[in-house]
Image (cartoon, rainbow, N blue to C red; front, side, top):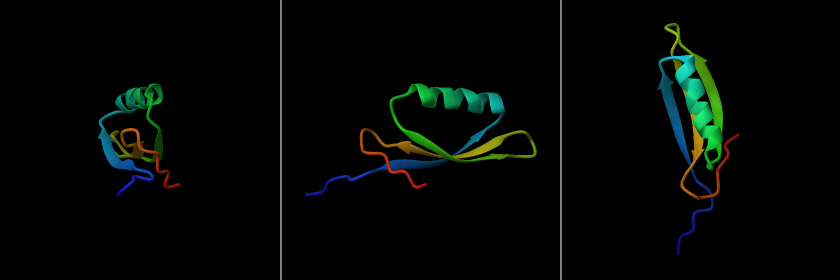
Length: 65
C-alpha cells in the first residue's frame, strides 16, 4: 500500500509585467490551496521569474523552507 505523506508542485513561472504577477498572487491568495513564493527575480526587460511551491490537489503541503 502507498500513502502520500506530503506533496507540492515546484514551478518557475515567467511574467511579462509586475501587474500580471500581482494578479497571479491575488488569485493564489483567494484560492484554497497553500503556496510559498520562494523567489522573485526581476529581469532587465521588466519581466519577472518567480519560483513558487503550490499544494498538489488535497495532499498535505510540503514546505521546503
